Each structure stands twice: as C-alpha cells, then as structure tokens.
Image (cartoon, rainbow, N blue to C red; front, side):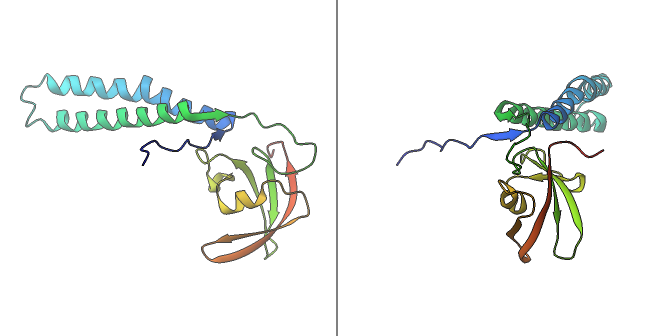
Length: 166
C-alpha cells in the first residue's frame, strides 16, 4: 500500500483574488506583527512573565498571526494566477461574469472564480460550487440544472461577460 498523497488539482485564482491574499499577508507582516512584537517586548520588560496577562495574551496573538502568515504563504505558493481572457465562443469559463435568471424571475450576477476567493455576498462564485460547476462551458440562453441541499434548481444563463460591472 502506497503512502504517497495523490497529486492535487491545480488551484486557480484571478489576479484580483491573488492581490487580496497578498495584501493581507503584507499587512500582517508589516503592520500587525511588528505592533504585537512591540507590545510583547513592552510587557516582557515589566517583569514576571508567568503572571503577566499582557505578555501571555501578546504571545498568543503573535502565534495566531504567525499561523495566518504561514497559511497565506502556503496558499500563495500553491495557487496558479490566471488572467481571464474573453472566450470567442461566448461560453462561460473561469473569470467570466455571468448573469443568471432564477425560477422566480430574479436575476443575479456572479463572477466565476477559484475556491480561494469565493464570496457569494460580493458576487464571487467558486467554480467548485454546484452552480459554478453547472455554469462552466454554458452559453447565453441555456437552462442550467444543478443540485443544492434544498433540491434540484434550474436557472437560465442570461448573459456572459468578461468585463466587471460598472
């Protein structure tokens, strides 16, 4: 029996998504972490560290920041940045802005993005989500059926665009 892990599938991200992750890493490294290190040093100078709540809390906060920095670094190392280009076939692919009409007639606009940058509230839909998977490769006018926990749903793909909404 082999103990090797299977190769991971490529994880794609848009340039904007990568920039958000990179900016968070930079902010923690240059602003948050130096501030907490200074607080820990000041607390350590007060004497007995075992009963010094500021010191104990500061060290805990520093560990949390270091853990987050590691997570972000590892994510950035495994991501492949893809700059989406318009598809001449009119099909919806990674990076496309899609507008769908739900069964009740409401329209919703999403951008198809990687799982590391999804934010449904902001209209960023992961290509790994059931709706995202169902939309991949579809054209304007196609009815898309997908399963969600509440059951099967049908939406109509109203528009495929490669430009961000104004």
